[in-house]
Image: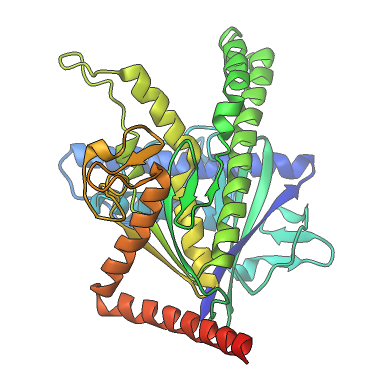
Length: 411
């Protein structure tokens, strides 16, 4: 099978290279915003959407305009790819996968991409990479790049520059070495509770740094905007945000790696995080209720990173030959796993579950994980042929290994 994988490293540019990195990112941001403004004006005039091919024809004209000659200093392909990003943003909007494209701000997600591998040279032995119009740039080589180089993305985060090298390589069809299946219930008091009774304690990286972040934000608000002191205060705010994101990412990678190594079939709730974390403020005519409490709940939900957890678990299981199966999350914590009686009164508190019919008692999150696993097995049994075939193969491998282990023990 073919595997696409990205390897990310911190760049170590000199002073001149840092200036060029900022200039190239700024040029791509300018092209993106200028094209978006033209698209909006075209829409207001009642005209049809302008596709990427027509937008790419604007670039040579812009480079010849008075005052925009500096666009010529930036490599052409990153500028073209900025227009491709805009076209993709519009296509996602038309398909109702995302909101309407927004203008990019300086210092927020600065990046640009070299899409042609022929223009790039990678020297892993000397920890350096050759990029068009930037020359050789050293990077912190933490692991080897595997596969054939496809493209390179340069991005800025927390005052540092990073390079993401995407590769493609052929690997053997993976066969999971694990033999078990498990259900996972995601929550706030417990980040993840498993159907076997174990659980993962939440990290709460934002909650732990919230007071520190608020202090730096107050200091920044009291400074004259764009002054040197304001820039120093802003750098501290950005650094804190980076620490929060890095801690959360590290926590999620460790959790998903452990799960994918130990289980061949994982059932997870199909949570709609964007709907769960919507504001309850309402409007001036119809103000919401318990707005402060809902705001705190939204922060706690977003602090967990459930969407990223599911994304990482999906590809890591696929790389190891496992399967991730999402099941509807409705009433999983209100259904008794013994008699299957569903009632809101079954869950007496956030943690306590007592069935009002058969008096079964357990932790509510554990009950949710058990129901997720059972519901997943039921859906898998009556699901589509493709899912059933892939799941059957995974379960067959697990059963064969279990039988082999039993025969060894009995022999």
